[in-house]
Length: 187
Figure 1 (cartoon, helix red, strand yellow):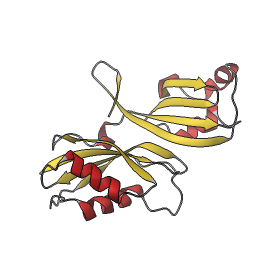
Figure 2 (tube, rainbow, N blue to C red; figure 1 turned 90 degrees about the horizontal axis):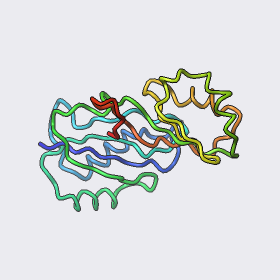
Figure 3 (cartoon, rainbow, N blue to C red; figure 1 turned 90 degrees about the vertical axis):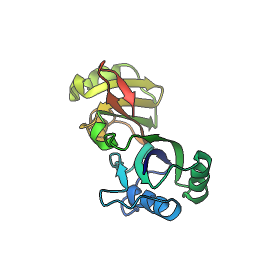
Figure 4 (cartoon, one colour; figure 1 turned 45 degrees about the vertical axis):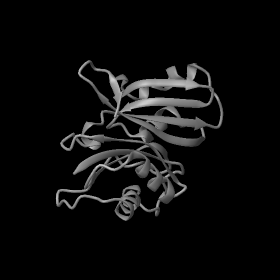
């Protein structure tokens, strides 16, 4: 048995009534790869994607019967995946490594707005969230990037910081864990 960690992009926003990402990815792997026959489980997923968001961080750990050629894996996925998704990267990880869900400490989001704003905007609205909730906040023209503690909902950030703007795109960019030196690391 071998464990692979895959990271996918979801190129269209998640919608109500749409098939769950985890169900779609399970079907993709069941139909195209030799999965292990384990009662413990064949899959482990990262956190759910909020409605209305695109994603560059759809994580799935897959337990397969054996190691496969990387080119074969990439070709099979690219040949069979929906145009709504793309494979970003994958690697093997130890069997007893913790799941993505259990190690996520922070989540990065990017918001594309309908207009730019000035620096004074941030100082007026920053009072709505505790400083320890935000690891990083970057603003460039009409794009806002933020890394939030995992238990802070993106919607809360939007309601505090972006309530006066129309949001054109919402993207969950990366998932992070905090290392022993208290630094953020992409999972």
